[in-house]
Length: 460
Image 1 (tube, helix red, strand yellow):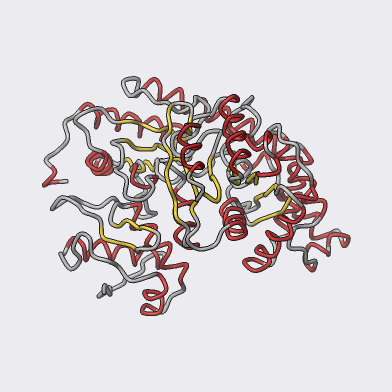
Image 2 (image 1 turned 180 degrees about the horizontal axis):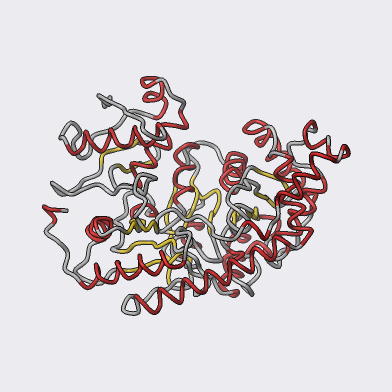
């Protein structure tokens, strides 16, 4: 069983573990198909916590080094000899244009956090924010969260709203409340990488369903439901990650009708939906008794605000999720929830969203102008763009050559479910670079890479 000979953490420990794994694969200490230690076994061996190992394996998957399968474990991926693994952007590469990690943009000055923090310090009536305890979240915070989610056209209820530590935490408490280890969860065939990581931690089985330019195919969903083994469907109907597509209203209605017919729970993630003005109402608006709706302020307002919201279908479901929330975090930080509430109530959050929408459209206009020969099905308001690559490009070759040229896209393997073959495509997170000029520079580099020929794979 694999044990790294040397871990030299110049940065996060999980990155150092992934680096050691990459070295051992390159040096031939690990062969394709070799099974790696379980998360718990490697954590014990290295003296770190399980979360660190989980993040390390996720990082290795990002680089195309390993693949995991629920119930079987994590294995070294098959690679052609000499092919460089995918490497993530790091702080040691300041000239790299990073289109990899899908973080939000926006000018924090709009929010004026300093004035709110001064009030926190001076107002004795806010003392309960430092001493209170409520797993579901304080009433005022739940009211603001319900109002924030209601902007999508969903009928919300503060009594069925929970405050979480971001969208990923919202997913974790939802699926740990819905599922048992081994349960089957349906997802889009290209799905959010965080869902894959969560399924690995919770020991859930994922099944990817086919998509087209309008998102998840209803017929594929119904065929999977008809087998009677699916517990839930996790999906993103607005600005799906990674494809950036927006599901039309009629298809959302059809997904809801199918879920109701077969009793399959819907978990609808609206993390990126804030960018798409005028999007259809969420699918669960048609089947509220079956639906969990997830939202977040981290992308829509500001990245450091780790506050998410869950709208549960019933009060009983709220109690179940609140117990899971207490078991994992006791409660979301009330100070952060209060900050989010004040920004929402004051209208500053809406101004931030408007700025982000304008900036997303401007960056997408750059993409359409500079990479006009690479059509995309991503919606024009999406801050991430799914880019099918022209022949003879292979996805891994393109990622390797782009990185050598100074640009980091995300490989398609990050989003593929199970052992399915990855399409020859990449995702570009146009929100990642701080300046629009860097976005333009990176896109021009990619245009040059596309126009060139793939280098010999023995040199990649």
